[in-house]
Image (cartoon, rainbow, N blue to C red; front, side):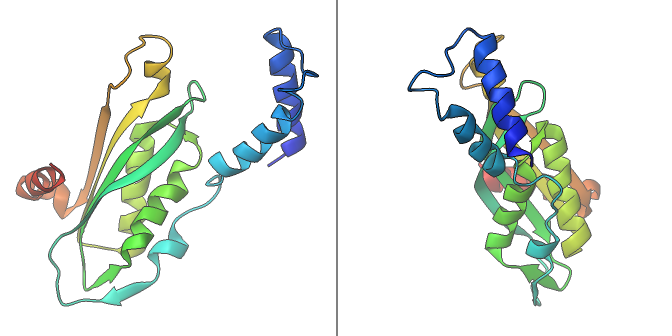
Length: 183
């Protein structure tokens, strides 16, 4: 990440909207924004292999659901945040992953500019690819500030996306069970 370019861009942006970049409240803003970008876009070029590759043997091959995983991401269309809850259900194939690793997986993929639909699929594909379960279902519920603060101005509106892989694609009763458990 080129923090110098980010700081330069922030200065230009502030000047373009008519701000005095030398006033006390804005003097350190370009630096603060570059630091923020390092955090918000920390998932660039990363995958969840490190989180999903350490597994534990299990005889229980029933569904595992981790729900209400809080996440924050950035809409690639307006560079405004969207945030909400992620829910991940999977059917183990002889092994499970530590529960914190699912939350870390969400965090890894949420930390870059994107659309919610892509984020949902990326999480599902990572769980399938690295954990190799019999199936996975990922559901995201999020509020997009590009809808809440600008444009249509409808705060509180939620966008729900979900993706199914493996047995969840084939068995609608599994999907229904996840929807019921999330309620």
